[in-house]
Length: 455
Image 1 (cartoon, rainbow, N blue to C red):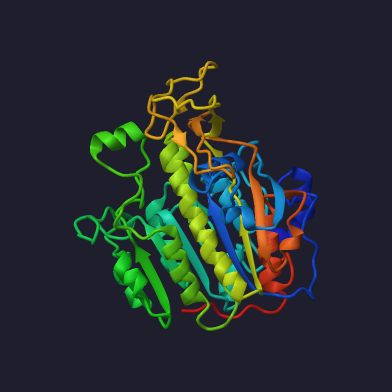
Image 2: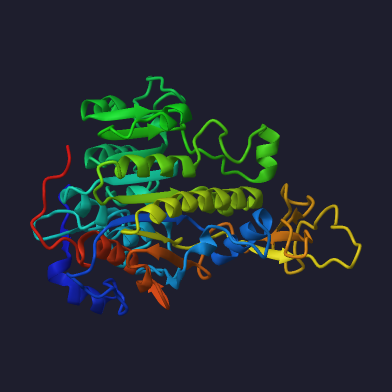
């Protein structure tokens, strides 16, 4: 079905008037700006409260996570064109394109038949990733959920619905991105075809893994294969689980099924990030890497406190990998944020009198009716934080406000090239603008004629 196009250059003034253009606060154009690489890490659903609880649990309230070491800080403003709370697909589309869209959008202005393509006068996608690929800049996508998750897939694909997994998976391969890491092997293989992790589910008979190999992709499916990848590979597709690399269910259900929060056989987001950076930077040219730890959101939406905090720790390890690359490559922007607060996690500290032990179990509900989690779910013992500066290990509970995404409390943090522009209030549209400024020297994208994308 033909789809009308949404051309930014022509309709920008109209869009602002309609409330779906860039926010008033934006990144100013500067063609003399230094350009370099960009690493955008998106711990989906992680608010400042998520990081506070993860800090207490893993390093203690007086110590620092890698997240704490990022010097530039701004308060994230994440509303959509039709909602004050972002969806993962609407938020990712805004991050990829730099405009306000409807909450059901996936790489388009809206979902269903209301959506229009976001393109230039020549009909080319204005996603920062597609602009980079057309300019010959290598792009990598790292995802701990299924590879078709919007937090990464919206950067190189568009769909009427975020549930169009089979079409989105095909577009991932069609994009020509240099690195594609994630789960969701089931979306790449046809029904009846056995993969490494399970049987395919595609109803159209297409074997996208075979197609990827024909297009020059090296395909890996295990942690060992990932970690042994040479940096000389041209393009690589990694599919490390049949579905996601984590089990996003409440703690009680996971215990009943004998499952852990994360698949112990799958690579961590830090391992995928490290390998992606090695491959993307091997040629010495600038690159764009988009990384999403999806479990911080999915676990929060299932009110699984231990899974959410474990996911935050894993995302923090990926930030550590990026910081180490930045130390040796200062012409790099490292930026991180969520698009909303998954489940509204809040840490509730438990005061102890001198010599008093932590309670052996927690109530299932807060006095106001909010659900409460301990270290092993409802009714379990509290989390015990790592030692504070006085050596005390204090207990805490996690209280949930929702099983959906809520607004507020999200921060943008950054380090490296152009990170000084992250300050005050940062609208979600500014993520794409800052990526463009760093890759191309302008928040509007490349000034020169675009090169052919890598094949």
